[in-house]
Image (cartoon, rainbow, N blue to C red):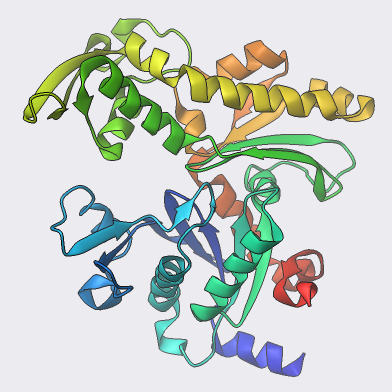
Length: 355
């Protein structure tokens, strides 16, 4: 205990919202200090990160789709979990080094969030990657718990709160009460799946191939879950999209409408709505009464899709609100756990618990 307090004085504990698309790092009492894409650029066939270990985040994302054969740009997390162990370690090492460089001899304690329902093997991968990246001790917190705190919900009371977190790789749905998860469900369909649906729609209907970044731009500019009048959308609901003609093999531009994008997004949107409905069907009557009164809170970048909150409300009949700054909700909650780490440590999962 004495040594732990000593290390705490000479190290900088941090919270990490490790997402499929973006990673946010927060410090005790300071909130989010880093917000970067979860992307790493390496020399092909190796684990050597370019630019002296600094080709991470925005620097690496700018290379996506533009690299020579000698460079690979890697997104090391898929569906919210570690898909490439070495690259995840490189990603975490970069962020820890940026925050903790001057005190590198004493590794920080790290609170890091994970999707609900991941396997023991997937948890172990997160523990190992974070420890090898330089953490002294690692604590895991389920994303719905962090999201509930970050959204300002009274999750420590006996009344139920419901959170729907739509990130890049996963959608997490959870009912929270007395500070813990009563019921949760997760599906690896979220923002990235929406982007891929747009890519496949243009490929299927126009024989035009676009990249994930272009698909993201289409979704943001004219995408919706419900019908939105064209005069409320950019460009009157029509967007010129540039890609590669798969038949002629040359660059080509096509005009895509908001209605087409809505059609492309229907499958991933429907699967998320169905997950919410299935979760509601499993909760008990007392919790159902709480939710009828208090509704549910949406967070994560995916909920910014136009009309999504209205669709959830139509399909469930519950009041629905979007959290303030939904992109940063989980990171804020992770920061709250970090600020009260000595108090919460006993209820958070750490590597020693598995021994």
